[in-house]
Image 1: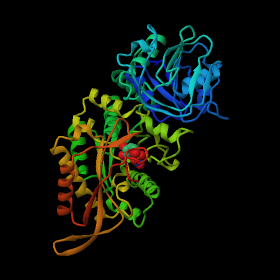
Image 2: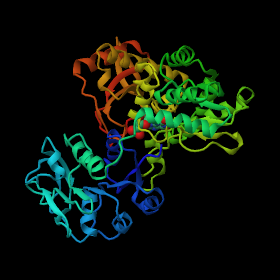
Image 3: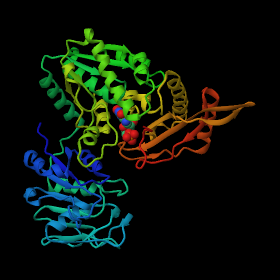
Length: 508
Ligand code: XMP
């Protein structure tokens, strides 16, 4: 099925991926493209609707991110924040620099009946802007204002051009979806055909076509992404798939056994387990730089495959659980490269395996939905994301078997207490990290000089932004007591309160 495409043009705003997700939640397939690549994209992909995102710059600056509006002839367009300003600026309206930034929740007023904002059940909207539209372009009318913003929304119904100064995509705009629903379903009249069932059907067809009678290796980690890939492959090509599990010794406590059990009891594919603790620990010996660790871990996965070539050699493809945010983060010219995600990118030529990435179009919540529809158990589908390099990026400094054991034991206690207290559903990721400093403590009558554990638990929708989970103090104190009493080598426990941004979810 050919899906009508909603293109979100990325002008660098921090909420932009959410726009793509909201469109998809409404059943409209959407992709994001950097503004620098937008012209080519529009010509070749012919989107059925375009959304211009927010962004940190000013349209009044020299060399501000821009777009040739003549390319959008006949295509419905919604501009959000910077997108609205760009539309006004390019179509003959007027944008003025503001003296102060408007930031926070505002009430809309003067909402015009029958316009896009008339659909809102709640007039609260999230504002985050400096410049603002002062005068709308010819053919447009103002459809809402706020106390300090003269053009909170504008539209030109005849040309299907819409703009909002606020952010309908964020949850701080309680009924923001109404704006996107109005634009995508009423104005652009898109078919809402982006569903998990359709995705499964299309993926199965795509995998069969791509793979033919070839054989596929599927590296599994026990995480939701690789498990869903394995399940999709099982549906599509059955025993043409071999699942490979590399036990690198950097998993959480008990996890390797759990993965083994799950794959033999739930999926029954051909499963090859590669025991590689020694290989990974010796490759990581003395290495402390986070990116160097990631690189080594990535390379050693590949070496594992090579070493087990006898068993794996008659395969043609390698399936990977790459997701859409990885694709955006690794490829966008606007996103600064924050961390390299080792699961994106090709393999060395000498492996001669072609990579297939059946989920490179999906966000995490879509993967879970696909997993549910494929009948995977909740323990898999609702599992927390866990980074490919595993504890390698949660142990700061050198990764040794002893430090892995400390981290695993502390992590186990923390997550066990979270489960026991029923806190799990509100938490996106939770873990213990081991720092590479030592501090003085006292235990019994003895002075200790040992390592601190940091606990991290965050709430998030998509890992792009996150907030520290607000545990009550008694809970944290109890976990800290258990860790220092039960885990040898730890004499201090900290809780990380930082949100993302400016921190990241992982410590490395
Ligand atoms: P950060 O730390 O960048 O993490 O806020 C965002 C999400 O990505 C996961 N993560 C990784 N996943 N390989 C992975 O497969 C990696 O190298 C990696 N680094 C971070 C992290 O757990 C979070 O879900």
